[in-house]
Image (spheres, rainbow, N blue to C red):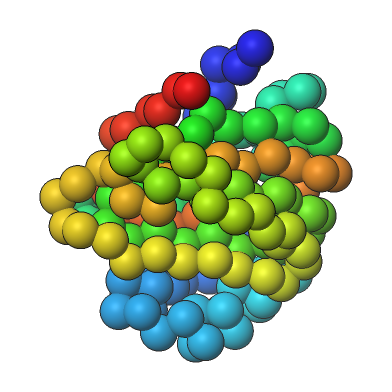
Length: 162
């Protein structure tokens, strides 16, 4: 059974420029964005992040009309619903290991699985205005921390069930 996902606003302790990071990700300048994320990762205080045993939490950095950026703090075994996203989606694993299963929508069919480890990322560019792009399910193989960027609020994403 899935637990309710808790959200909190994240306040970073340094003057890291999150807006510039979002602009780079939105413009698909992933290599430059990853260099900035590596710098950010050195400064994150894990004890300041919301944590929920047997689940994951969204520590929201930016949530506006242009994009959503947040740190997801995963307990081992935490799993998302199968879900879709807006046109732009980017996931970067700061620490840990996440299993990502990708799906096709019609009919809902598993396409592939991949393991994302420290420093790995996945991104997707889909159809603007739709919330069923990049249909996937993420599970934490171990306690993990990941940074997520979306071109809209991910809570609007379509949920799928078998």
